[in-house]
Structures are given as C-alpha cells and as structure tokens.
Image (cartoon, rainbow, N blue to C red):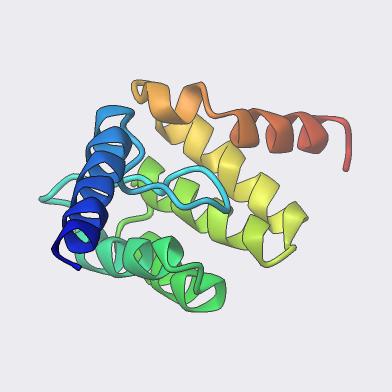
Length: 130
C-alpha cells in the first residue's frame, strides 16, 4: 500500500512539472489559455474570476465575468481576448470574431494575442464577411 501511494505521488508530481514546464499550467484541455490582465487594470479582478471559471470549463459563468472585465477596462486587449474565447465556447462566433478583432487592434504589443490561431481564424472569417 505504501508503494501505491508513493507511485501516485510521483506520477502527480511528474504531471505537474510537465504541465508547468511546457507553460500549460493555466490552460484547459478544451481550448487555448485565457490571458491575465495587468495588475493595475480595472479589469483585473473580474478577469481573474473569469479565468478561474474558464479553466473549469464553466463557459457561461466565465463569459459574465469577462463581460464585466471589458466594461471595467474597455482598453484591455486581454479582457477582449478572453471575452472572445468565452463567446467562442458558447457558440457565439460572430460576437467572438468582433471581440477577437478588438483584442488584435488593442494588443499590438502582445505576441500571445497577435499569434493566437483561434484569433487569426475568427478575424479571417470576419474579413470574409462571415
């Protein structure tokens, strides 16, 4: 029995280290990771709450928090990006595309936003007249 618990502990540790080492500790299996806002952003608290729910795949709850984050700081590219992720997860693709475009425009200096495959795909659909 002692060996069983040691095996479980070692396996859990290896899984954790692997996730953190590859930078996916905050990602969920269901999609790309949500992004943190700046600590001094008015969107920070609502965005963090949204990320917690997004990581638990509570898409509708996360959506509500991300809406509040965008309302608190309309200039936050990360808040718009996260709102777009939640809209995508709730099958609101037209709205998601608009939010992704807003995130792209506001987040010119953020490579996580500019290189996001899901963002680029939605913006491309938007440009084609979705």
